[in-house]
Image 1 (cartoon, rainbow, N blue to C red):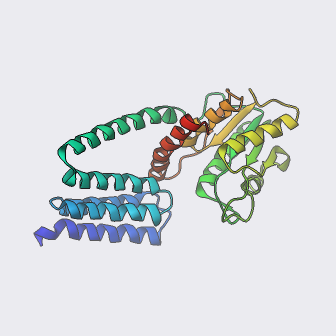
Image 2 (cartoon, rainbow, N blue to C red):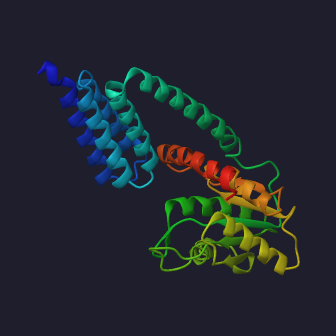
Length: 286
């Protein structure tokens, strides 16, 4: 029995985590933390068997990537660790040294990219502007996704704090959506007391760049200039990239408004993903 202690503990913890998630899905990160402890226990059990360790890491990675929403980049990270584990045991010494060197360089670059992302992951000081652009996110049927709800909560708080500001809710219709993101946001905000005349709908955009470009066009059609007059509300991890795109579109002084954080582990997942989005922005300009 002693030899199977960690394995038995792993199974019990996994059952507890899955049970909590199915019975009480709104318990935040707790089920996933318990499941993480289960994986750790399994790793301790198989610590002397690298092939079994690789199998556990791969299985958990695939679950995170394909079975759970919002944890995909945790899955990619575990797959990368599993690959390193395999290469450590099968790669020739010279090749392994090269892999370690490139891995260290990659981690260093990742840390460098995350610096501006984290630095901008907050609401700017004195963010009041005449226009607030609310960047779209997924809609499930007619219901805003959790990410979009967080952005709308940030917009709602902003509009209540600055009653002279007008919101531009921006987003077209994507796969699985029965209304445009702009319309879903309009319905959500008006349903919580924001006057309809304070909300302008932009319903064509399919990317962050289009969100901003089409919203700036609406501002100009109203006889105003977006430069100096725009705040952008988005998820905290996304604000740096959004502000960079606004600058490329001729609005270098857009204020950032950070939406409330969601589940901590999900947010970390998106901070990991954002490093690749920012890299694409730096290399390709969008």
